[in-house]
Length: 105
Ligand SMILES: [Zn+2]
Image (cartoon, rainbow, N blue to C red; front, side, top):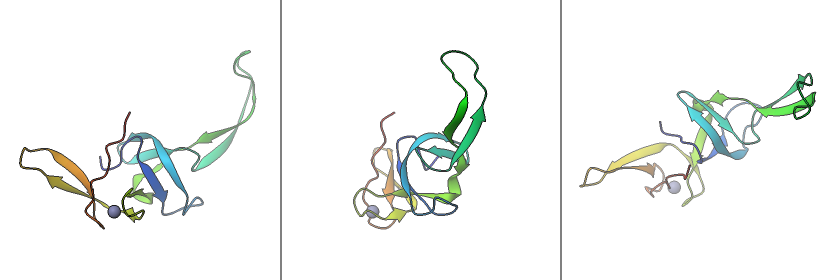
């Protein structure tokens, strides 16, 4: 998985193209990004704690439609890998070769 929960990504395709957000969930092939690709759902009241109405929900989107934003160069980039001599695999920016930070869960 190149894109992980907590990463900052830029949307490349779709109605939210150009927007940036933080990955809330990442699963194989799909990501959910905070505030991106929202859909309004009309829901019926289920209980006192879940009133009905129109709620806005972030929908999963294809991982190929987003690119990680490099904290060093600020560009939307593809992810490369670097294997350190001790065998550690690090994600790096393909544009500036800087390490991409590991997001905190
Ligand atoms: Zn970079």
